[in-house]
Image 1 (tube, rainbow, N blue to C red):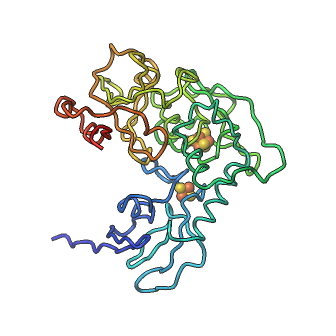
Image 2: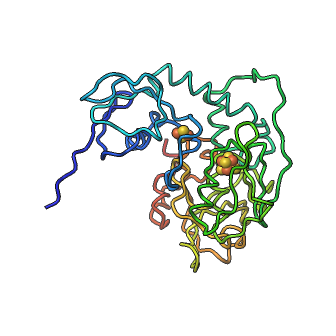
Image 3: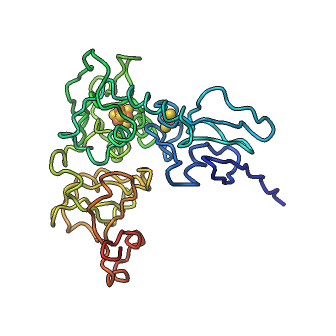
Amino acid sequence: MSEEIKKFKITIDGQTTEVAPGTSILEAARQIGGRSVPPAMCYYKPLENSGGRCRTCLVEVSKGSEADPRPMPKLVASCRTGVMDGMEVKNLTSDKTQEARKAVTEFLLINHPLDCPVCDQAGECHLQDLGYEHGLERTRTEFERRTFEPEDIGPYIKLHMNRCILCARCVLAANQLTEEREHGILFRGEQAEISTYLNKALDNDFIGNVIDVCPVGALTDKTARFAQRVWFTKPVNASCSCSKCSGKVVLWMKGEEVIRVTARKDQYDEIEEWICNECRFERKDLKYWSIEGPRHIDRHSVISLNHYEKPKNMINLLNNPDAKEISVKDEE
Ligand code: SF4
Ligand code: FES
């Protein structure tokens, strides 16, 4: 008979939950949910070995465990630190954590251009959200930002290295979704950059997913660039029978026009199922898709605003569980 594994109790900002041994503090916080979940610019649950690079998820451990209640001497990266039984963590309730997050945001913005008005990721950019919540009003650095020319990497993807924060999610996605390693981080430190080796094009059936995992606007979809601001488009769940992927996508519509196609993502902006290039780049017409209904965007961002409202009498007509959660203005 299998023995029941004893769960670890953890308290984050005064809220307690129980998780399996081996769970990270970040995942435990997600289990609790709400504002106590630390932001994550490099951790991405569907990608193995992600996290530990950006330090936006730092938290204070005020009690190490029941067995050893001493606080941890430094802030820890919650995405890479395992829960101990009886651990107590402070995120929102820690001034040190909030101060550190401000400092990390400032570091991430040292080289990142403030080009949100022309960037395709504006409205769904994690760095933009972080900047609004923790950023300074103006930069304190006087030296010039490092700059690169935009680079075509393959037929569908444009790299704006100026915006890259070197989170390595795209490198992990490419390594884990494709059979051959095609791109990576070249050089080190201030010189580090994402590139394809000897300008080798990224051509693989699933490589388009690197656009979705990029937390900023460094990797953009060449078939949808500059076509619309994301907040003017309406997301709908749609599916098709595809031989390469599940065919379950989100179409970003402007009227009857399919502006772009992305994978479906959860409230932490993590992909639920990887989609193939054909669905993402080649099917920009409603004739390919069965529409399931409006897509509720859970993210705490401008992207969640001004989308579909749920008419009272439509609830049963939409065959889409997400639709039940869509805000209803006229009921408020
Ligand atoms: S291109 Fe995007 S996903 Fe890749 S390392 Fe840079 S910020 Fe991260
Ligand atoms: S999300 Fe934890 S270090 Fe980046």
